[in-house]
Length: 157
Image (tube, rainbow, N blue to C red; front, side, top):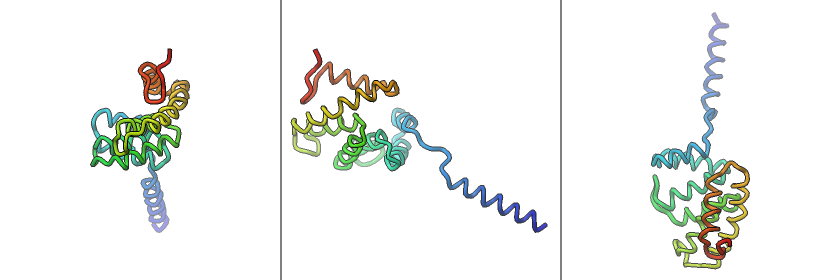
């Protein structure tokens, strides 16, 4: 009888410890899917988790939530901070989004030179992301820059 109680207690402790572990890790694709479905609350929660785990695209997505008031109040300072973090982590979209803020004068005074520098920083990141074969959107964004040109980056001949 005592042995059964001990086994039951051990089983309960084991279940409790497993339940405290996040067995269902969030992926960037799930967060982006929730965002595309306009489930901003879910996407925001996932983006916060991903950014906290050091996922650059998660930080960029979180910046987008703050920049466009998706599931949270608009906070351009927070958006810029998150885009910068994503950019520093090697996410081309973060560089591009921060560059757009400088080019448009959102949160910062208009600064074509700063925007151009950030667009230039985004290019090799997009190339790398595109060449990996895992990020077709980076290919599209890279093509858009080359086709239309942006501050500091001429369109390709």
